[in-house]
Image 1 (tube, rainbow, N blue to C red):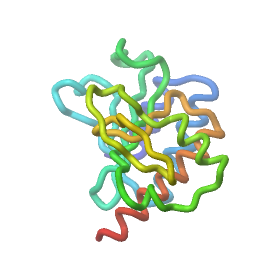
Image 2 (cartoon, rainbow, N blue to C red; image 1 turned 90 degrees about the vertical axis):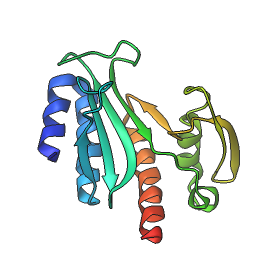
Image 3 (cartoon, rainbow, N blue to C red; image 1 turned 90 degrees about the horizontal axis):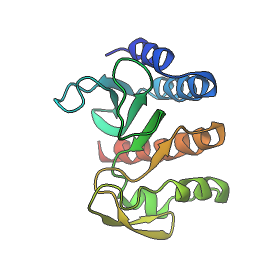
Length: 163
């Protein structure tokens, strides 16, 4: 599905600063060659849940949980970005600025999905990290978007070295 469709979902579901931040992230993803796919699985069919992929590998997932068409009562109002499972040596060893590490560490998805992995992220070990998603950003602000872009860059590099 086109990036125009995801942008349309942003404009119909979000307001104010959330629109700006979500569009900023989507435009960045486009500039990095990523694709968007609206989920059609039974559970997510009526929700605005998007897969973000690079070279046919998952980067992350976005839920726009606004007013249209269906609000998911189990998730916060606004939007959520979950990373894919970033349990890779690329994340253990990657040199990262302390300010970005601080933001990343605040968003490690610990214990939210009923299971967990032990994950080394930039030299710090976390457990139990969600089996399917390493990071979760609820309604990310502009500072968090900067960190999120860096995390996605690392994932993109990780995918590229495997292909």
